[in-house]
Length: 96
View 1: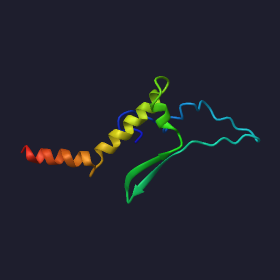
View 2: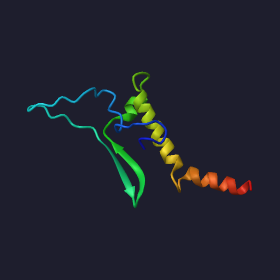
View 3: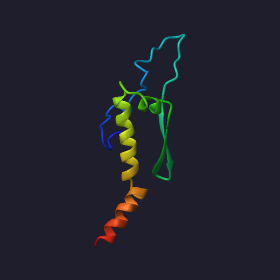
View 4: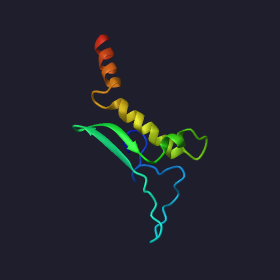
């Protein structure tokens, strides 16, 4: 997912409002996460607390989160067995 269109060499982008997590003995912030759900070896869903949906609806300062959204869509459309891949195969066979 991190390289399907845009490159995220350091992992997923942070929450839009998350600039830096501060750690001390008295302060334990929730660390936002991104997890994948697999069916066998196929990634079928993503779950995250990074609030990308909120970032996508904003008009500014959301470019990394929008790029991650593009990566998710491209990844989903280009996986073997995806609906998009099935349609491409179907129409390729029809035009031969």
